[in-house]
Image (cartoon, rainbow, N blue to C red; front, side):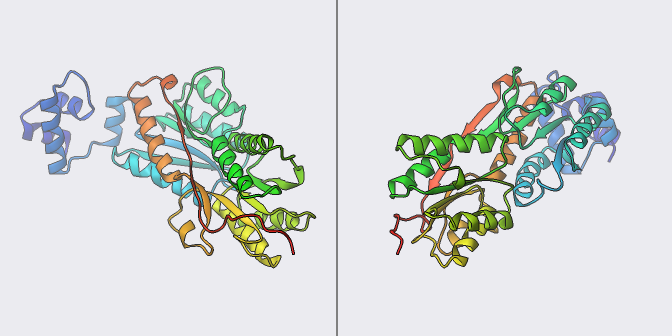
Length: 340
């Protein structure tokens, strides 16, 4: 069905129908609803090129991902949430994959020059992130998944990484643990720096000295976590508890604990950050995994909503959301045991 056919069916001009479908304020609510309901019933879909001419929008949101480090269960869950919300608005996701920082910068410049996307979701921020500065200079709207230090206002959504790890560390200290290892993300990334602050704050509050040998910074993979945990478990005195930066990290730590002949939840405790993967459920692990829990899919849904708010005119200075993180205690964390 063409716009002309829909207009004739409704007995309205093509201009009125087009404006009603695109949310122009001069069209009254009753007419807008009548047009929308009829379009849905008759299966009308606006031509993408015509829609872009009418609204000045591309009908797509952009993301740039590092192929070597950012593809995996976290990105797939996040994209699932973003796509779920944008599909309801018939907006697409345009994903560009790159290998280097220079490639990523070039991808943002292409997005801006080609006008193929209306806005961008910026992932994995650093404390001082030049990508955010570039997007502001290019005039390309974006929402930051995380936070960065910036002189100009920007829109962001983040979880309370500092509070989450401080609380988890404090719980392990309450259980008598003093040798607590932290398997964190890469140095410089905001979430990793915030988690380290929470970890150090909890230790300091109890007068427990920080041992650099008990902190590892890496990507969140099973294999890297296994090697880090294996080396830490060879220390004397060894760690009696681990804070795992992700569920993928927790799998590697668990493997190292078993190889060392130790029992998780007894000789060694662990609390993992859990992004609520449908295929990796903390309740179904043995023993069940204590977690600091936050749904990355839900964050994707919300960031898509924040993008829509920006495109509707909401100031970026008014879009700041810091989500609390729940501590869920299960069988993997228990009181410290004296070594035999």
